Length: 401
Image 1 (tube, rainbow, N blue to C red):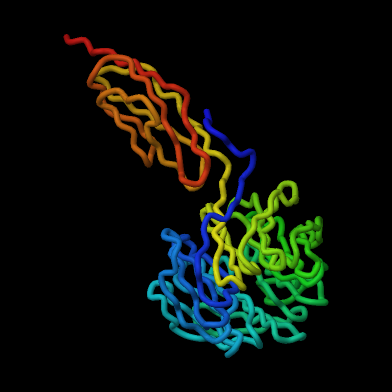
Image 2 (image 1 turned 180 degrees about the vertical axis):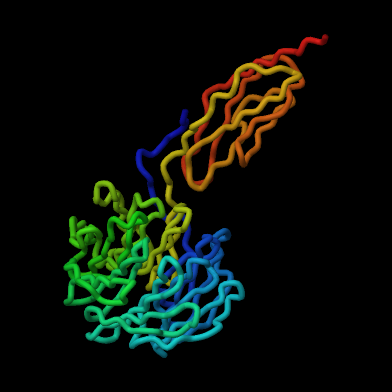
């Protein structure tokens, strides 16, 4: 049983704003969700946000004009593209220092790691004859260059690592499709005007593309390589992020100072969230509890807290009878991400029993006979909490033989 007001669908609102460096562009979370890196174009730095405290813990100097940022799947390294020297800065995440730089193509823009972490793709956005540099992560060197469409912008790997999509800006109005195994550009997909951001759903069935001059988002069916839907969003969409559970897409509207929230099931905008000035980069936290939005003209990051689907108990009917000489054991369970913790909401447990907050196990040996009534709450600090119906356990006194 769920008590209190419960939203019908997930809701998203800006709950805090984090000051970062000047002219921030992109943001990425560490795989464990403990940190977020933000590239600051004008100061040639990366702001390291401690997610727990919501503050900038440190600043890392990188090459001039940092733009894209991505973490290796194992979380040990981060790559930052620098448009000034045409390089990629390699950051050791543990120490927070640049350990090497890798020469890349002309005006490196975006960077993405393959799901297995063996290679990274870097788009070269400064030339009509567009290319993607392939970096071998183990050696830290560019091993090949893949020709793609003109003015490549964003890049994303499909979850299975078989293909990568590259948006081609301005008048090209298309996405270049790369076959990763062969390292070749195999096809193009027509999309809206001036595509910028791109992201795949976690199951790999769809990709969403922000069309900057079209004020739309294109939905690509990956199996057929065709656009199946075009969704009107805000003015000048730029970045795209998708919730880890694949239910929701977030698109930054740089001209409208908003984020459009798209329901994947219906492909409709369900809400519009005001942010800071000129939102560009965007990333969803690995646990889905928050979305970080980079506001380039405000020098801030807006933190959108996501109210996920309400928690619900899946096991909440413990045995109603107990005995003072018999061990008692029952496990409460509830849905939710992150996983909820449990506590006694009201009433009192039978003497001798205790409730484990993490596991939900109610256990012990009753020490007093009587009737004990109580309710249990499941909460995770993100979703609306759940509360059980009134539970009554009757404890009888063991007979002495």
